[in-house]
Image (cartoon, rainbow, N blue to C red; front, side):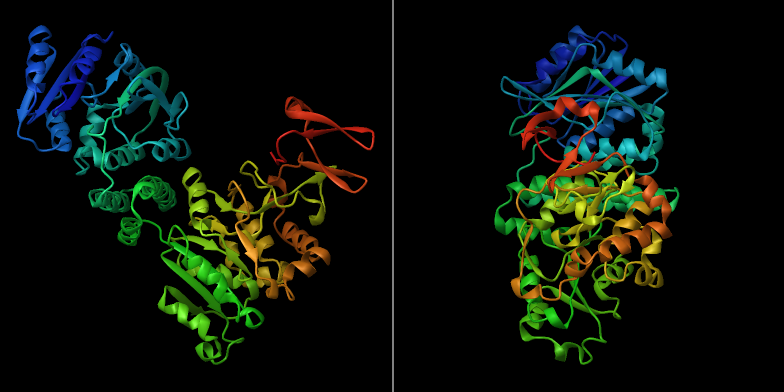
Length: 573
């Protein structure tokens, strides 16, 4: 049997449709527990009318105490083997509970859920993605998709003994604006979750629905909810590596919620909200380095980073005392003035361009670290774009600029023959990140060998991007190219005289350093997709596509010769 719990508050217009969808369920063995939460309209009368016709409906009256308390009262009264929740202004398909119940029993799952959730607004119905395909979910990677995409409890049923066991940990079903708390922690602890896609839940959107929140300071409660989630996670008994994975996933989910609220906030409230969020979850650290030849212009870079639509918790400039023996006294006033606006200047011994990331990884291991170069002015949405990539794939490294590594006869092509500055690509080890565009590193994305100064100074002394890419692939971390609509930055002209790329690219030093890293870490080469190829005809580079991809190809003629090319964009698959 399933116990269905419905908090009811002033929903006389919608309640009949909700109740009709329940009493007509093909599964007859249900109890419908309606908690009238101090309604002042005809909701209680409607409940009594339906209860008089169907003895499966039970009514509990209480003073208005909120949906969270109503749900918990319902759980205490529930006698079913499984427990489900539905909002009183929503409705479900007739076979909703039967199919969920059978799927849960068949697979002995703690949770069964539907992926078919429709948002109903007037006569329009829009399918909402809840991030899970039909099947059984048990791994962290599979559960991650559910947590990232939705934080609701009402498209699921829960094994009653599992639900009550979690409640003993003081994890209680909360109000609608705290659904994430229960959903995240229950999904983490579920032995497995069954997902089906042949039943529908219809979420009725209305301005005063239980799930609606005005974009005022009231939604700041969300910050405290996530703090509770992080605190509870820290006390759970599980391997540290798993706890770190979950922490990163929850942080990405938190940012998904933040973007929802930030989109509708006024500028004043937006700044206040971002300040209130500091200290919750993984901080955002923007990290860069510089040296004497660029110290007079690096303030331009930092000014653009201070002006981002999403503010970093810290912007850290790492400098070497060997290059600035008098420290702050050797720095220009334009740069020092920025310390009053949020810039932090830290000192670290001279490891060349590696200073932009290595010391930050050591000092801020639990942070989202975004690296940038000191010879560019950045668009004000760079942090926002990288974070949106992170929300979708919290375990990956995200970059706004990448080259596609290609092969010829299963041998890696020279650097200059790779697909340069790709516009889009699927997440891949073949995506070679280039730091100038901006790169976001989540916690533990790089292998611990990344800190070995003797190695990186020997193998890639002038190519930090080569080393960081190698340590990502060696760690099994894919690189995601964030959709790059327009450049993320523009170069500062007077900074290019001593640019490393001139010797690395045109001088062939990149290939030497890539070869050295691959020789030291042969598993990096083994992980790459060697079918990704590119060739040129009369000096014009063409990306060659596999035969089984011909449906996406278009034939063109170049100097009279037929060539098949991808008809939308160049991709490394």
